[in-house]
Length: 377
Image (cartoon, rainbow, N blue to C red; front, side):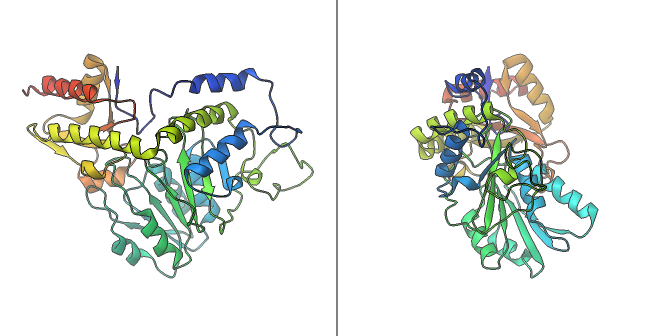
């Protein structure tokens, strides 16, 4: 099998990830906060590794949850204020768009959506013009999961900080793909997921919260300590981690992070850029191909989105899987506004997304399969 759907879930996982998860399950269960332990738990170790990856000095403000969808819901519902305006963009995933839509339906919140023309470029001046005195929150996708276009998060953060507006960064695609320095973003929260470029298992991710932010409690329940309190204990990170954490998933993520940190993000990014360039240069030789993605030299995410005239994206994906055992993603990729910008709504497009495990031979096999399907030579 050739697997080109890493923007959804990366595969294969690094060697040893499954074993790390299995070891966690094989050991007697423990409670992070109730037992007198002489060594750090895998949860604490992973928290520190995540903080280090993002150059963040306070691991206690790394909150674990099921993934970036839960993290974004936690951040949006924890920071939005009744009667305020929220600025977001047409690049966003439904993990942002839908929570905001529910808040609008409930009343008291208005959303201003900044247009991002193909290939999903977020213009700083356009974003700045959307910020008003009533703006209470901004939510921005770092890397588009449709086209791979990267937003200048540093510049966007500066615009928000100058106005005292908290910024939520959706780093679902950028975490593990490019370097992100969160050390100078005290008024921001960053959502990440483990199962994409971080190469970890499904069901684990989290939220990093800048030192000037304090979220309203979105989820409450048992913590294993201070059961006498009517409300959650007022301490980081436990007040945001009600219930039982996915410790085996966190153990797997901690192991996967070791490989990323050892190889280095720049090396991983260079490989993806090379693969992207190879694919795009050959696709542009096809008749009737439209490539929607960011140009290869700026696409460290390894995402290539395209369509072929007269061939529905879903049909291409089906034949690739059924006849050639090649996995890609087709459709709207949970980002309908971005597809409206591209003019590919409602059918969507074909998306190839590379990982560090892919190689140029697989690209050649994929291109030959497309030629066979479309009758091009």
